[in-house]
Length: 113
Image 1: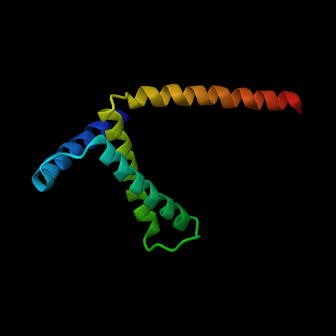
Image 2: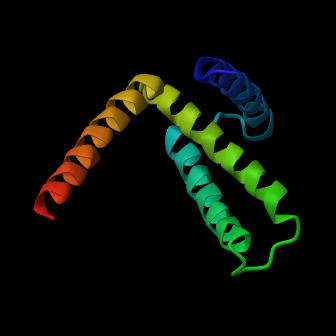
Image 3: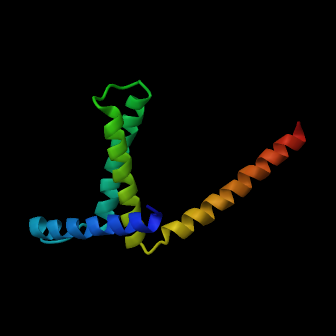
């Protein structure tokens, strides 16, 4: 599965969530509410990372860690879509720039030694 397929799957789930939100609350979550939900997921992720490192006890940590990483990825995909961001293009641009920057830093450090 590539990023485009993951985006389609994430957005399909978001459509279903929005239908459920309308049924339950009479409206869909705002982008701000989605971001707050993401922040909660990141907090859960941090605790699971600690458990995975052995400094916190959480039963079935590895399975829960995979689940939480997936939740965070879903949130990032949906937030990017709702904000009109081409996540794939931004990831490639940002990562390429960082690779160039870190590579040049490594080259400068190698020259200094």
